[in-house]
Length: 317
Ligand code: CUA
Image (cartoon, rainbow, N blue to C red; front, side, top):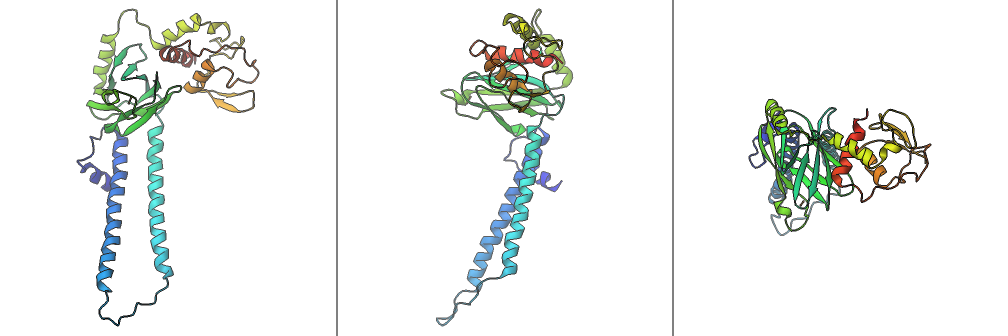
C-alpha cells in the first residue's frame, strides 16, 4: 500500500515490530503529508493572491465580493470528508489495538515504584524483562501496587495506563525478533525515568525451551497458588467449583458469563468484576443471593494473591 511504503521510509519513527505499528504509521504519514499539502495550498495561495491582486496605482478600488457559495461549499465539504475519513481510520486502528484476539497468551504485569514484574501462567516471574514468542498474540493483564504507571512500547505503538485498584489490559503480536524498549510513560515519582523494561522476542521453540528450563521443581502455577488461597481464605465454604450453589454463586463457568444483578443490571464477568466482588462484595450482588453475606477482603490480599485467586476462578470452566 502506498501510505505504508511512505511510512516505512520515515526513518525518524521507531522500528515497526507489529502489524498495528504499520497501521499507526500509515495514518500518521497520511496526517503529516496531507497537512503539508493543505499548508502549501493555503500559504502558497495566499502569497500568490497577495502578489497577483496587489494595488497597482493609488486609484485602485477594492473589488466588491461578498461571497461565492460554490467555493465555500467546496472548502467546507472536502475537509469534512477528509476529517471523517481520518476519524474512521483512527477508529478502526484503535479498535484493533484494544481488542485482543481470542486465545492470546496471558501474562500478568505488576507495576510498582519503580520496576515491572512479569508473571507467567506457570508461576514463573521475571523482573524488567518480558520474554515472549514471536508471531504470537500476547495479552497483558496489568495492575499497580502503588501509583499510576503507564506501559509504553514504542516499537509496538502501544501504551496503556496501569491504574491502582483495577486491571487494565494491552495486547501485541510481535512479528520481529529482538529486544524492544518498555518505558513507564506516567510520572510516578523519583525513579520514574529508570522504570524501564525490555521485551525479548524469541523464536517459539526457544521460548518453550526457556519456559521448561526455568521451571523449578515444586513451583506452583498462578492458578495453583489461587487454589491454595481458595481454601486458605475460606472461599470454598460458599463458592463451589462444580456448579452447585452453596451460599454464593459457583465459580464454574463464571468467567465470561453474563449475570443479572439484584438491581436488574447485567454484568459480564471479567477480571475487574471479580476483583471488585472480592474487595467490595456489596458493590454488585448477583440476583438471588443475599447482599452482604460475604466479608470484604480489602487489605487482606496482595495484588499478586488477588490475581492468583482470579486466575483460579477463570480456570473453573
Ligand atoms: Cu512508573 Cu513512571
